[in-house]
Length: 594
Image 1: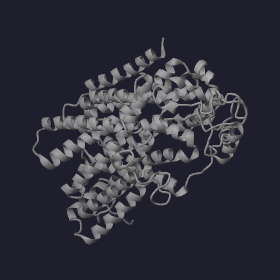
Image 2 (image 1 turned 30 degrees about the vertical axis):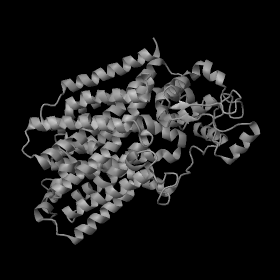
Image 3 (image 1 turned 120 degrees about the vertical axis):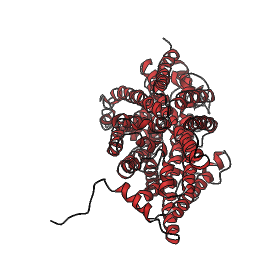
Image 4 (image 1 turned 90 degrees about the horizontal axis):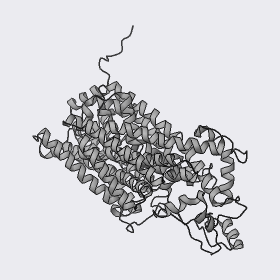
């Protein structure tokens, strides 16, 4: 059976499952649409939360960024995982106890201000829209390869599938769909990793194989990888080369951004009890760990495979020839991916060989001059294709390639659905019902939510055609926006009675505005190519890149909120009592001396 047919079977079967679940669990009320009727079991919710959060950035892009950078990009792992600890300890149980449907509704009620609710809606929409661009980018990459169509056509098909099950099912349908998507994506991620780990290290557990020995040479795997990439002029894989300040800020931005993501926080409104919210976060961390413990091995082993394919005779021997790429089975994946426009090579010096090396390295430039090389001839290797191409690079069975196709799409679509649900809830529940038409009927609110979601899909699809970076980089920008705007407001709303409505509004606006301007200065205004003044290679403030600025924006948010609150009217006593009731366990009393 041809690979294309196998891909269609896997992808088609998974899509049929998702849409079937959405029809079975379709939302019939606003409670089911926004919060799944508050009847989701913590384990089920933990699995759905893991799928909701482990997006195209985690599945498709993260391992690719780690593979080509190494240790310095481990900040993606540390930041995103650490954020769940913050979420479980500091936010989830308190927000569930408050008992609202949306993050914006909590902010509006806690800060006793329709304006605060409106500003929170704006922050939510900006962060979620930026995030969903990364998901649609991943959808386009996955569809483009496995259905052998263009990126644009793949993105449009993916948008139609999301529309079919997210608009129909609401939170209830999306929850059970995400459980199925988690099962698909975790199998699709770990099974190829096990095969590749066995090939390269003889260990079936990738995380252990990473620290084992390279089967072919008998040397420690990471030491062998360090040697190979160093010989080609690249930085050592396991060493720290990036700016430490930027790395710390980036990790912090991802952590607090995770804890402030509205589509993740909404998941904790779906469980029956407050204690279930904390258990949901714990289970989500367990399910996430299955993928995140595997990702570093996937990146490192893929880098080893790619390097050995480009230098089949070793780095001291001759590179791969154009004839080998065109005729030998192990290189078929290159020509297949070349059709997508995400992989390319060029024989610049006409010697019939493809030299892959770091042509920016001074020592390699000297070696290139001696050998008549005219630059790196692997001219394009989009980081987002690595995980999807990994089974083909390692020459794994066709059914594994089909499974990875379904997994990549599951990861992108699950998060896209959650984000679109957050956007539609903000528009219908917080804007239309909360601000403009409080007396709207439940049927009218449901209709407006579905229309808002459809509009959000159109906008996300359009922006996904011209993303501001790789999927994981685009998602990092969204985390920065959430970190700078939503997270501080939630923290101050739960743990401080001093912050009043004026402080909260001023803080959110300051954090969002400063961070958004910093991002636009580096990525282009409204992400329009060519309109940027700076680049992340030469940033505006020292070494702080646009993806790391969210932590700075959060500090500005906190500072402005406290300053403005100190200069304006004190928080009313009933709001202080409300905050205390949310934070203090039911039945707790004063300490007694015995």
